[in-house]
Amino acid sequence: MRGAVLRNLVGMLFVVFISGDLIGQSISTLKQNDIDMGRAFRFNPKSDGVKGTPFLYEEAPKAKIALKGGKIYDEIPVNILPEENEVYIQIGEMEDDPLLVKNWEWLETFEENPKLFKMVYLEGKERIVEILYEDGKEKYVALHKKNLIKPTTLKDGYTGPQYETYRPDTRFYKVSGLSSEEFKGNNSSLKDISGSKYSQVKSYIKDNKIKTDQSAGMKKVLAFIFD
Image (tube, one colour):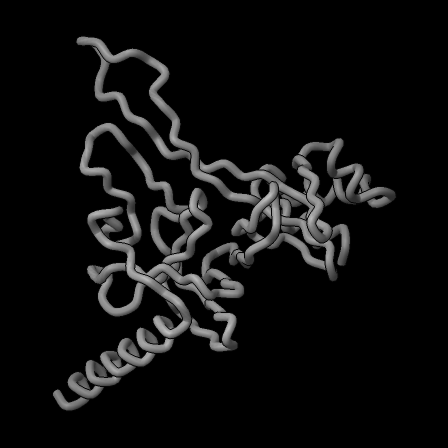
C-alpha cells in the first residue's frame, strides 16, 4: 500500500516538475474546442465524413525531446502536426490537454524505425523534417505531410458512406544551407547520389528488399552510401 502511494506521489511530482519547466520553455496548451485530440492525439472531427488524422502519427510514440535551453526529456508521448509545423507532447494523464512545444531543438522517437526530427529551412520557410543523413552543413531529409483526399465517387442510394481520408505523403530533399533540391527514391536519383557505388547500392537494395519510397528505407540506403 505504501509502495503504491509512494509511486503515485513520485509520478505527481514528476508531472508538476516537467510541466513547470516546459511551460517556462514557451509551451502552450491546445484547447480541446480547437481540435479534439482524443487519447492519442487523434483528430476527431465529430463527423462520419473524415477518416484518419492530420497528425503524423495515428498513435503517438514516446520520444526523447531536447529543448533549446539544454534540457532533455525521455519517454514523452509526442506527435507532429505537419501542416502547421508544430510539435505536441502529452504529460500527465492521456485525457489531459496536449501541450504545444515552441522551444524544442530536436526530438527522436522510440519506435521500430526511430526517427530524428529537426527544424530545417526548406521551401522558403522553417519546416519540421526527418533527418535521414547529416554531414556538416549538408543534410538529406524527409518532409512528411498529410493530405486530405476527397472521395472519388459520388454518393448515391447504392453506395456506402463516402469519406475524406488523411493520407501520408513523403518527399525527399537534399539541403545545403538555404538551398534545397528534391530527389526521388528511383534509380535516376540514386545513381546521382551514389556515383561510382551505384551498382553496389542496387544490390544492397535488392538483397535487403528495401523500399526506397519510404523514409526508413531511404535512411538505410544513404547510410550505406556515405558511411
